[in-house]
Structures are given as structure tokens and as C-alpha cells.
Length: 295
Image (tube, rainbow, N blue to C red; front, side, top):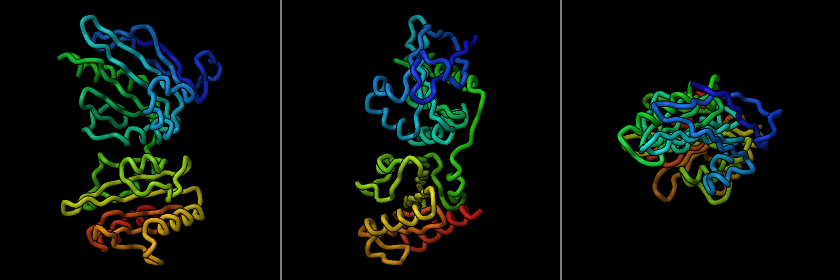
């Protein structure tokens, strides 16, 4: 049994129906849990009323609105479904990637289920489903609610194209730990580069951080796409001046931890390798990514 509701685009309050764009049909019930008849709606101005603190994460990915629906069943914990409109499929995929750690649950275009929390993305929507307590029935109910919500999202969308430039196969990519982001604050949360925004990341830059395992050692590859080649060159010089000033015109440098950092620019892209055990490893990974960007 389904009911049609509408999600709000950026800055639209609940009563402004003339500006609603995306129709979604959310389930009234799933696995015996029934909608309690009320939905909560928040947008960019009110997100902190719902998730104080964590709202910054969603805003960093172009968050537009969220609809929250509660499902109830007698003598069972309530199940909460949160449907975030992220404005684009790239940002829906990105906010999902930022905290991904569990195996795919086969829901939506990318998902994970662990610790009683289902997270997935489909089209421009990021969805989380969880229960306010535990019982033997809860895990399967969470998955059922998630599938119903995923089925209600009728359109799909592409993941960030920059991910396609990551070397795979023998390169040792740890796929579950790939992060797509725009903000240097979020970058530092996953791999600390510098307190200042020396790479000049902003809402218009796309960045992919990817860890690789080589002989048990972790190497990080960072790819950043800027609006223009000039912006990329300025960011490259800013990074080298702050992070590896002794490098001069060289593209690689051994740091105090005896590992290698390598950096280069291709058109509007900046490519950086952190923590390579050998200079050759840094160059190899940079070259593989550059070859993929050239396709």
C-alpha cells in the first residue's frame, strides 16, 4: 500500500507546494510496521533542528531537504526512515561513501547494513533506516522498509565520474573506503592534509580519496577536479609550497616518516599520492591515474 508525497527543493517550506518537484511514493507499511501518519520535513535552513552538529556533513554535499517517516508496531521498537534529497546522484553517492564500511546489502545503487543501520543511495537520494531499539524481528524489518523506500524512488543517476579514474585490479584499491567529497574539512576527517585549505577545495571542486594496499602498506591517492586548469595549477602550487616546499620543480619528495609524496597536474586535475613506501610506487600510481584521466 503506497501514498504519494512530495520532497521539497532547496529553501522550500512545507506549505509551498507550487515549488515541489520530485514526487515519491513512500510505503504506508512494511513487514507489519505501519506508518504513524506523520512526516517530519526539514530543509537547509532547518536541518540543525533535526540533527544538530551532523547537519554540517549533509550541507557539505549540497543537501536540499529531508523527509523523516516513523513506522510502528505493537510491542516492537519504532523504525525510522530518513530520505535525504542531496540535489544530485553524485552527492547522494558521496554522502553515502563518506561513512561506508560494511558490505553491500543489495538495495538501491549502493548500500550497507550493519549495527542495526541500513544506508543506501539511489538517484539523488540518500536514505538511512534504523530502529529505536532491538528485537529479533527488527533486522529483517529494517531491510524490508529499505527495499520499499528504494522501490519508491523511480529514477537512478550516475556515481561521480572521477571515481572511474582510480586505478583498480593489481593496484590494490580498497573500494569500500573510497570517499567522494568537496570540503577540506571532510578530507581532513578521513586523511589529514593540513589545517588550512591548501588545496583550495570548495563547493565546485570534486575530490576522491582512495586508499590502496601494497605489500600490507597503505597508500592514499587523492584526485581533485577544479573548474579550470588555471585553478588546478594555483592549487598545485599552493599545496607544494605548504606541504612539500623542498621539492622545488620535482613531483615527489620523501617526508620525515621516510615515505614518499608525489603530485602532478593534468589539465584541470591535481593528482597526489601520500605515504608511498618507495618513490617508484608514488610515480606508478600517479601515472596509472593520469592514464585513466586521459581516456
